Image (cartoon, rainbow, N blue to C red; front, side, top):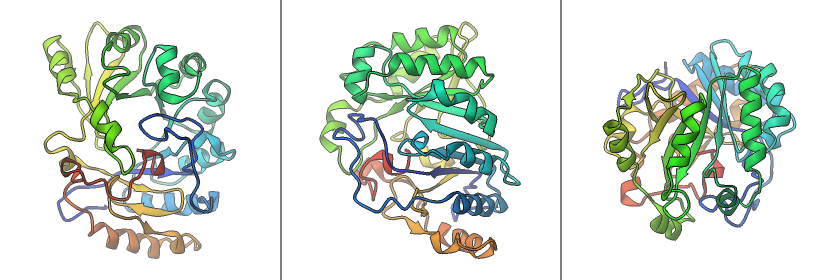
Amino acid sequence: MLEDSFGRRFYYLRLSITDVCNFRCNYCLPDGYRCDHDRDFLSLAEISRLANGFARLGTEKIRITGGEPALRKDLPEIIQTVKNTDGIEHVAMTSNGFNLKQKAQDWIDAGLDSLNISIDSFDPRQFEAITGKNKLDDILSGIDTCLTYGLNKLKINTVLLREFNDHDLSQFFDFVKHTPVTLRFIELMQTGTNLEFYRQQHVSGQIIENALLQQGWRLTTRPKTAGPALEYQHHDFAGRIGLIRPYSKDFCSTCNRLRVSALGNLHLCLFADQGFSLREHLNSDDPQALQAAIRNLLTEKKPTHYLQQGHTGATTQLSMLGG
């Protein structure tokens, strides 16, 4: 089992398979994707060895992220490879959903267990203003397709933005009233390139949390492989509401996840100062050197992300590691 010097255990790996994204979200890539490196992303064989190495160290859940993972043509093969790894019990993915309706069945057939889709507004005009894409209707149709195909573990990620969606949160509650998904409000995080935007748009999730408790929502139990969200349920709603508040007290005390970039770098935190290359250990079918490297690097993990002090580390934008 992977355990750091602070007693935190790591059951969950977030694996980026590309840093390319085809959306231009104003909080992440307002000018669109710009490549500053060779696109030598992890191959299917390297991903297989990486998944096997982490599984042998107690990892039970792998989330496939990007950029936008659906831009890789071999995504179904990647899902299937990770799913077939001994010890991996849950394969998740985060996507912007641009081709969800067309590809959902392929992903489900490959073994995908759960899916997170980013929707920052249910107003088509606001959605386009945030993402640069007129895709909301297609994405919502894709969510219906997933539910039809039986993928019931669906979550929607919504970044709280003061000028774009904070003024009308009722549209989000209306959606989960009758739709069996978990909608998660995520506080905007500062990165290396969005300081001014962060200052203008950051909204605390505390107000939402207070309102949920006042309206009779109940906090649910988090499984050990869950992400950082606190999830609430209400007997009058088909769906749930989640909150991710990275600036809240003790947020990092329950950290259970590590990250590997599309270039094969281990990031001990989303806001770590650097990533550590694992690539040299992904050219052999012997996982012992990889496991030893991961264990050794884990001793460098810090107790917190230091976001409160304005420290953003090497993360210039969230697409680098999939958030």
